[in-house]
Length: 328
Ligand code: MF3
Ligand code: CO
Ligand code: CO
Image (cartoon, rainbow, N blue to C red; front, top):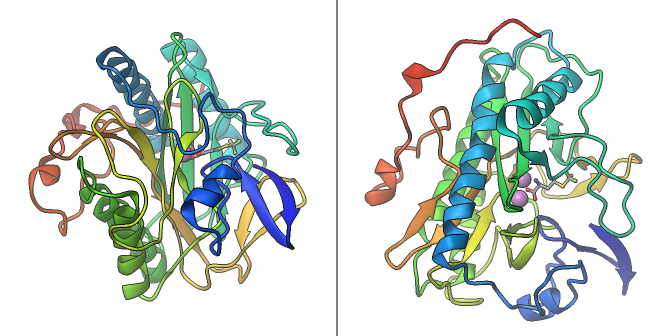
C-alpha cells in the first residue's frame, strides 16, 4: 500500500494492492517491496498443520460477517458496525483485527477493525459517523488473526432494503465473478485463468474490473505472494499447486474502472462516483480443485451458474442463526 512513483505510474506495494497493468506479472511482483517473508514470486506451499490453522482463521473471519449481517440496517452507522465487529473479535472469538493500526510503508495507520466501503467506495472505506439508509450497498471486509498467528480474510456485500435494480445486478455479477474465478482453481491451472474468468464475466455484463488492487497469498502474513489479478489471459502466470492459499476478491464497477484515493490516505472510490461491488473468499488449492476456507452459515452460496462439486460447497445451515440482538 505504500506508493511510489515510477515513470509516472503509481505502484502500490501490498497485495490486494499494487499492479501496473503494463508491467508483466513477474516484474510487477519483483517490485513488490512489502515486508513479506518471501522472495519475489515465491509462493508458500502450506503444510497440513498450517492448512488446519488456516481453516480455523478463515472460519472465524467468516463468522464475524455472519455475526454482523443482521445489524446491517437503515439507521445504524458504519462506526457502530465496526465497534460491534471489534467487540465480537476480541471478546467472543479471542482473535485480533488485522486491519486495526495496519500501516504499510507510506500509509497512515488504518484506524478501524474492519473496512466498510459504501456505494461508490471501492475498498478500504473507513467506518465512521455515516448512517446507513435505504438502498445503500456496502462491502464489509474482515481480516482476523488467530492466537496462533494465522490470518483469515473475507468480505461480502450487503444491501440496505431492496436496493436499486442496478445495485442488485452489480452485486450479483460481482458475486458470480468471484465464484467463476474460484471455479478455475485446481492444481495445474494458472493464475491468469482466474483473472480471465473474472474479467470476461464482468465486461460481458457491461461492468468493469478495478486494476490497481488484487487478491493475495495469505497465511502467517496478511499479504503474501502471489498477487491474484482479477483480469488476465488464460494459461498465463504461475502454475497453481496444492497447498497454496490465496484470496480472490474482485472489485467490479458499474461504470469505468478508474479509481481515486481520498485524502484520508485509505478510502478508494470510483473516479466517476458510480457504484462498486466486491466479494472476497480465501481459497486453498487442492489436487482436484479449490477448498473455500471462508464458508460459513450465512455466507452467500455459490450462484446458479456454478456447477460441479463447488456448487455443493458446504455451508452449515443458515436457519440456526439468531436474528439481530439488541445493540449492547
Ligand atoms: N482486507 C483487505 C484485503 O482484502 C485489506 C484491508 S487493509 C486495510 O486485502 F488496512 F485497509 F484494512
Ligand atoms: Co484480501
Ligand atoms: Co479483505
